[in-house]
Length: 501
Image 1 (cartoon, one colour):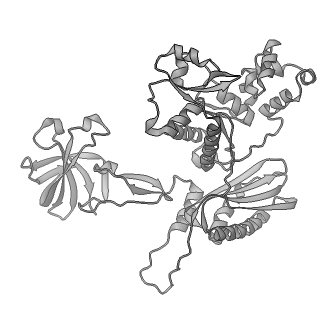
Image 2: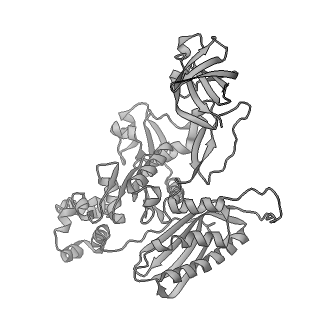
Image 3: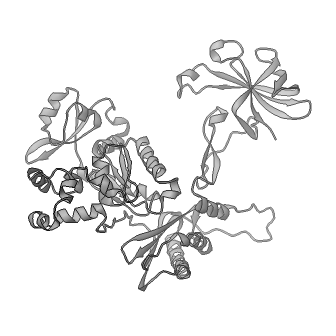
């Protein structure tokens, strides 16, 4: 997968400035000095729409728009931030690299299914980047060269080339899509080679004699005839162990045996560093330069040899050894501090069962989103004060217990017919799902206001909640949509929102 960030310098600067950044409705241009002249080195989408182009003199860009925001470019910081973004993308795949000056390359082989397939993986990445203010275009193809070309010269925000269709997707693209030097591209255009199809139709020997080996190399890489390894992004603090084999291995039982040995060394290294692994990558380097990978995650930091070995060995069957594996590496892609603690005795009473091991097994077998738990959200509205998050998310707050809350919440709330003395008296009877129930006890109202800062229609909205018990002892949670007096606060209808156990 190749990610193209067309406005990376300006997007990066806006993120760095935070509240002090120029407004989104004002064109932003970055300037630098080239050959003694002040020129435009980057421009955001709005600036390009009014005619600003990269390499244009700054004075000409200012003449196009009076209120143009002009700031200094920082290419070193752009490169550094791009590398940090590559480290963030390691959560998608163990093989990620910055593709300067404005992109990332991700080897998603064997990792797409963890996020719901190829399209879901690409969509997830683009959505996450858009949430942080970064515009991105993505292409997924058989080779790095093809994905790079389609991301920058394709016509779609998302391009996914089916397996084996790389050649057909590349032929209509311009020769500049091949990552060739600018002088070579100009020479090719002068000689009439405008598209990749024009080059493919020519004999290889005359092209290499005239233009050198780089043209043929990039063609072979784009079409998959020459392997192009991706240098994975790394952090100095990574805990990693490595095993190099004198002879290639490939039998599943051999892979399992060496996996256990690597895990033992790995956990020893984690203990020395005082860390526990949360995300672990096991890479298998084959003799044909292809890399197979296994990724596991844990709900909390761990350096338990048995637990990590089991999670990794469960996925050994997904590894294709090809003609043999010559190197294995085990890396803690994400590690957190882990201090030693006292293990409870078997004689200790009222021990709470530890289900973390079960959560880890299910999450790694079924996917990150298959095992979730409710996490509280700061909101007064019952349907908004909870969200479902991965099992590894740490809960930093709890629900308020000043008011009773039902064990089951109905979504959406169901309308009921209620007899009550307005405006503040609790109901005396209600009809729900065709059955009439008399109320023996009631508590309320608990008034909840709308979140006006999120949606304008909630500026005046009000709900009055009542905790009621019918004559048979069953408990319900009812609310009136409105304050019982003014129509602009709600419909004044009654609803069943929850049931108590």
